[in-house]
Image 1 (cartoon, rainbow, N blue to C red):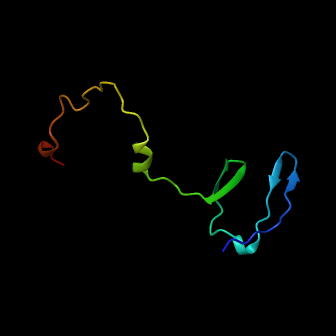
Image 2 (tube, rainbow, N blue to C red):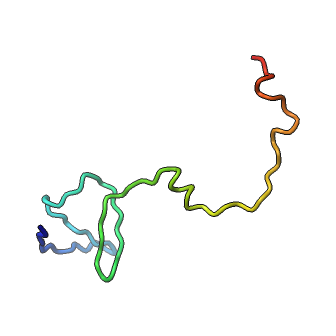
Image 3 (tube, rainbow, N blue to C red):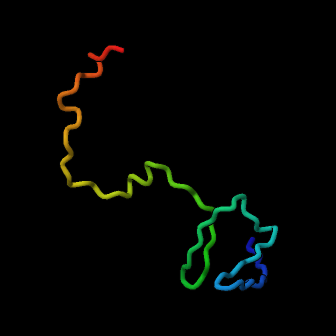
Length: 79
């Protein structure tokens, strides 16, 4: 069921504030807002996992130095 609410935007300097009716309150204080086809979409912010961030990165075309070269294998180190 889609219920519509008429609210007035509050202008404070260059910032607009949108009062959200209690029936539409979100369980978070962090949201993502975007504009699609002239509509504002407000969604709870979902923090990405490290794997999700890594999956968006481009592969590196660099050669990295072998920093372990010349070191003893971990099995040979006595504490």
